Length: 311
Ligand code: NDP
Image (cartoon, rainbow, N blue to C red; front, side):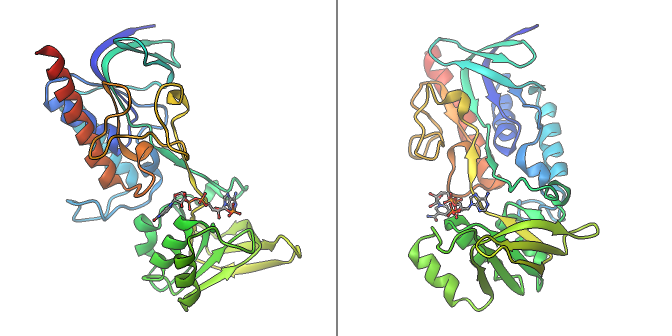
């Protein structure tokens, strides 16, 4: 059991966490990243990234995160492979407890715990994650040029992503479990007008098929029990995200969907010295490049906060 004492602790090892670590280390804050046990976060599940500026060739999400990890180490960031299980943000310094029984005390805290995409949790799903199943059309839609795809969900994300996918795919099946969408009516009108989109009402996916990558799905009409096979090369899930904010809800202001509220143009939360960066405070974009930017913002704001306390 160890006790870590720091000026800055960053929770999370996705793009926001590493970016915060790199900026903070270069500002002389000797930051510690508590990486969690799924090191690298959501991006590690993406087969190929090519829209991250500076990449002249696509790399896997895993490789991109390994590079960020190495870059953080190169600048002297201490990275601890452990998971925070409890926080006390009423004390100064803040106190964090970890799953491995360690205790961390820190003057400032950057929360970069991300948001987790919801999954269908059906048997064959896991096998095809990164092999045809994606939770991010903006990231992966480009790989389905002239191929049929399906998107699951009936909310704003599903509608926006279905429309986006028509830029590439030959056909987009929008599979929705009810007979009515919850997406805004303007989006519904666009969906209905788009000849590439077919809404498959009252239906759920029962099974995914494919030798290595997905080549088809079996869907079930929940009203009639009728089953149908559809050939698709990709399936996008847009059934919502859950921000990883359970630990902080006692202390921090969260919006109705559970995301941490930060001040406009800032990563500051309602507690001085606590900052939030990346998807944990971003319900709108959920992009690595944006998370990286907000991680840098959080580090700069932590550094300014610490400097203001010293004077
Ligand atoms: P939502 O929760 O709004 O929608 C999720 C959709 O997925 C619903 O249609 C839901 O069905 C369906 N769903 C949920 N679980 C399952 C499941 N297990 N199997 C099949 N279908 C399922 O999530 P969004 O990500 O779309 O949006 C989240 C929030 O962000 C919303 O408030 C949304 O308005 C907002 N947003 C705003 C945007 C904007 O530009 N203004 C863009 C994107 C999101 P059902 O309808 O039956 O519950």
